Structure formats: C-alpha cells, structure tokens
Image (cartoon, rainbow, N blue to C red; front, side, top):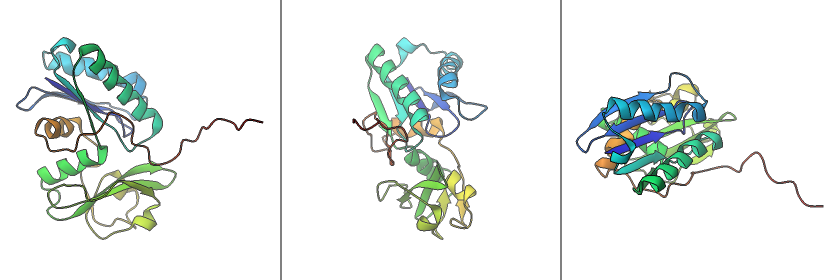
Length: 208
C-alpha cells in the first residue's frame, strides 16, 4: 500500500494506491490550513481504502516548489510516518505531478510548460516534452518574464492569461497521479526535502 499526498498548493490532496491503482482519495474542501487538514484526510483515506498505517509499504510526497508552511507540513508528516513505520519515502517535484496528469488525460499532446502560483505576482514554472519529461529545473519569476505561447498547465496559466494564453488543465496537483506515477516509476524520485526557489521571508537578525 502506497500513501501519497501533496501540500504544495493551497489545497491538500491525499490518495491510497494498492499496487494496481488508486483505491481511495480526498482533497481538502478549503484552501490553506494544511496543518489542520492533512492528518484528518490521511485518516479518512486509509479508512475508505480499508487500510491501517501499519499496512503501508511506502509514502510519496510532493516536495514543491511551493510556500514554506505548506511544504513543511507535508514533508514533516511524510518523514515522520516513514520513520515510524520503517518504510521508504519518495519525494516528487509537484510540477511533475501536474505534467503526468496532463499527458495521461490528453490535455497536452506536444511540448508544454507547468506554471503554479508562487504568490507575490510570480509563478513557479518548468518545461516538459510531449511525454511529460521535465526539461529543466523549476524557476520562479514574474509571468511576463516567462511568457510563452506553448500550452501551459497549472493554476499560473489561469491567473495570468496575458502571459500564458493557452491554459490547460489540471490546475493543482492531485495525489492520485502522484501515487500512480510513483507506483509506475514515472517520476524522478527526490529526497523528501522542500524544493525552495526563493529565500525565506523570515531571516535571523544580524548580530551587533
């Protein structure tokens, strides 16, 4: 049993994969409040899938890029569960999750980009080939600096149509596709550490 979840977007998404396909999943009904919503969603998905934590064989988690607080909730939870249950934890770039769903559902059939909301009027963006393979590392910048006529998957395209006129779904990562991608070895697996693309807002005060 593989438990997968992503907290890089405003909404939390969780799924359970039994080795054949996803057997239970849930997405938070409201944005933000990752810390309050992740644990209940995990409990709900395990119950719906007829599974217990002790029956898990692996954990998969989106590592971002995304806001610090949301990523921290997901990654700390994933690492803690993996440690307690003595199972591996697989980190996946959250943009790759969107790319896989777009390719597998036919939303894109050629090269494309994935752009998600980075706040501060910026987006996180990476480019992909027609098969969903990432061509470069994700970057963060203003939409105008990353503008493209290529198809663009993700919430960033909806938020900034002038820069990304060819918007495609999905908009946010779905843990069902995270689980399917990890189970099918479709992703480059990363260490379960946050993928930050900008320096944190809060920094230690300089010593006198």
